Image 1 (cartoon, one colour):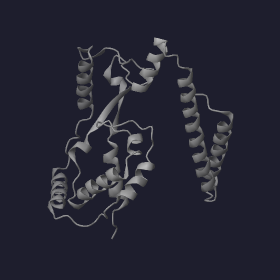
Image 2 (spheres, rainbow, N blue to C red; image 1 turned 120 degrees about the vertical axis):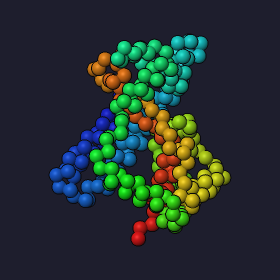
Image 3 (cartoon, one colour; image 1 turned 120 degrees about the horizontal axis):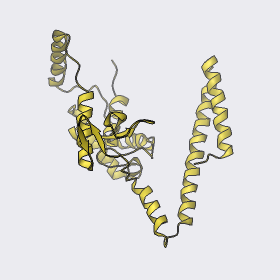
Image 4 (tube, rainbow, N blue to C red; image 1 turned 180 degrees about the vertical axis):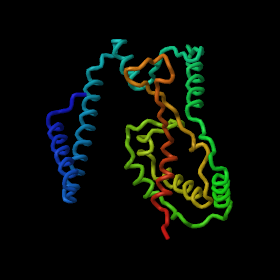
Length: 243
């Protein structure tokens, strides 16, 4: 996307103020920097919406190629990973690639050797004792208004986690659904429980630039978490009672 000249001017002004802030730490600059950031985000969002609107207007539904291009963009279903090979193992099908990536990540992200068993044992005992004690009111309960505020501050274009629920869907929940969500979150807070399903992440393998993409070692993983899980963690951190 080609950024408009007016937006470029806003970006240049913001960058100048940021440089000045780094040199002087003048607190009076922060409101202006934040205001420019909001203007830039809004301008880029409006430009993206306008570009998408014009693209749909120009779409020729009788042209199969144009229709397929738009459909491909909407579904975001890309499979550009070439056949993989590592240590005499080859992967051609999607499932074979998934298995090879999983084996590679398991080898890379191994547990460090325990160099202090006594410290580990003491730490484990402390954690287990804390988890087994009766729940204490260390976290204030939330409500539907707070959850709605947290949802509206989520980024709409963030990729969804394993449950497939996008932030734009959460932003359009009715009030009744928000009240149900508050009841679920408050129950988790009361009994000190975090659902196992919300601890899962969707792993996306991104190819490293200028590398041989036939090797699984030349990809870096990113984890996509469920937005509902991230909202619960925000409730925990926002309402934690300090003594």
